[in-house]
Length: 145
Image (tube, rainbow, N blue to C red; front, side, top):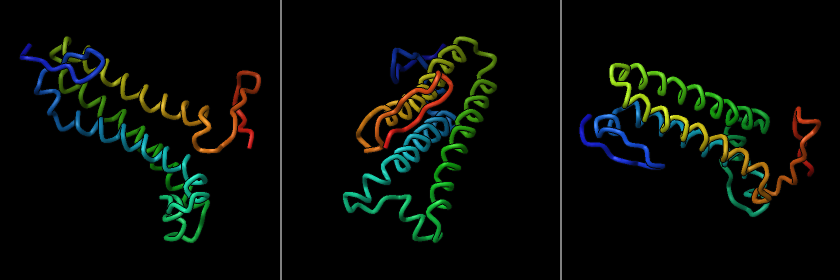
């Protein structure tokens, strides 16, 4: 294996993987998902504070609040699909190097966990003024407004 770098969490990747276009795409899709979710979750708080929220800008453009919310939700969904597609391409590209794939898998899981933990924290946190989350019989959740 060529010299490696440890970008985060003790993950050891060769430089060629770190600068790989698909690695950049993987991180772009991860941050896109997190930022779009933040835009959605923070819309009410930003409007209440007089800040021009991204969802409201979309509303002004489309004329439909539901359409604006749907567009952001769709972007979150697409970002997740794009993240998984980039991960698959990376695994395929380095399939002949199992030690690289093992480290890539750690990085991919870290990206997936980043998205999931951002959503979980956003729903549990009172930062966005969405209320408290309550689990319903382990099958779903309800936001108390």
